[in-house]
Length: 237
Ligand SMILES: [Zn+2]
Ligand SMILES: [Zn+2]
Image (cartoon, rainbow, N blue to C red):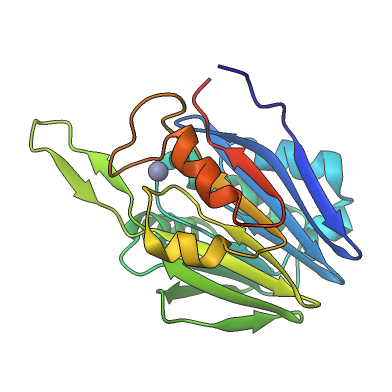
């Protein structure tokens, strides 16, 4: 299997995305920039190292929104350090974290963080629980989440459970980036990726058969090819 070389970058006019990393069970980390907006998607482990390579400290402090697709550690492992870093650097502007309804990992990280630092926090953190019916606009970027199908294996032989999981459409200046997050093949993703300027599609099973957790190359490609351009990510290494 060919190893994806990270970072992956895409940019059109003043709308850009950089995927620092997307390796299943290890880490994800994505930055979206649109005009004045700096957004982070799925801050996995290593996000501070990658953001600091890409942005100035002031630009990192200007990050206004974080979008989480689901609570698996390879997508949220860097949340604690990002929140702490912004405190140490004396961020003043609010930070909003969007996460799928029922994703308790984000709520617990947030509660633990407040328990430790709430008396010395220079910026406000807003948690926004969202679902496939939500629409929001921040810094002139329209964001439209959609529900996807993603499961995890329970360790004690009790099978699998579905986890709250979202993909996101980011729309700016009539351009659309669709990021599916971790997902099995599903209609919501097929619909969202179609005609997008860029689709970022996971192929978590690579050459192997797909299931209700991740997609195969074949499935991921078939969705990616319905967009103007696409990246396949989250391929096992
Ligand atoms: Zn993952
Ligand atoms: Zn996952």
